[in-house]
Length: 328
Ligand code: PBG
Image (cartoon, rainbow, N blue to C red; front, side):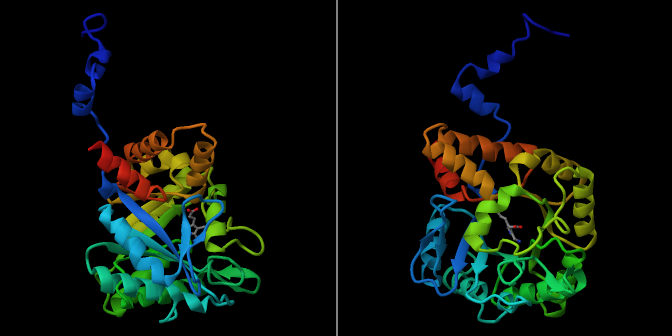
């Protein structure tokens, strides 16, 4: 066995060319999915205070934004809607003329298959309670909720969504949605479930962006505790049994171990959602001049990939794509 002084690991770090040759993890623009917020009734773009450079878009701006994203060669967008009406049953989430349904059809008409359209399937932006399920007798009624989630997914499929992404963490949501989609003739629509979505304080800026904070209690009865990685694996396993196509671990940065474990255990694409709090922390520090934003973005996205994510939903999609094209 060779060892120092004949073995020298620094030899492969001698210059950039050699480092490039032996680089193990490479970020590509194909690793990125860009979230978009679209708000009903909005007249012009509205900044999200807690997420610098992120805006809520009016419907009329959606195609412009998708054009920018598509010009960067980002393969997919993830749509989140903010409706003008909320009610107990979250009806605006599955209305034929709901904000997400309109946005999906607009993008599909203008871009066809040039960019893939993913859409969030959840209730919290649409229910007066701000919860991801329907309340019955002061409790979140799981089985009632999955019926509504199925209606949402089918309504999005009708207007041409490519991927539905349930994020409500209700038991059985994947099998209910798969059945609903298949019965309605949408057997090609992909399900990417937020399989292991943890109950996390990293979501607070998103709740500003999407106006979906729970009006009472918290999400601990449905989201996974961040202390329980084995339970997270049971969630992933359950979704696979129910017929999910892509699983997701969320958040990403504090959950790299969970991403790595899911990748090792299961033979299915694993995505990661680098959430609003991860974005806000980087932006805040960068705006103070305390970190170099570009280098941090590269390091964070690379580490999520290194952990095993096949791709990443990230608010840094556009800036990440620019960095990748500058460096290649
Ligand atoms: C709601 C939803 C949330 C996020 C995505 N979908 C918030 C929550 O569960 O409170 C968070 C995304 C982010 O923080 O970027 N179903």
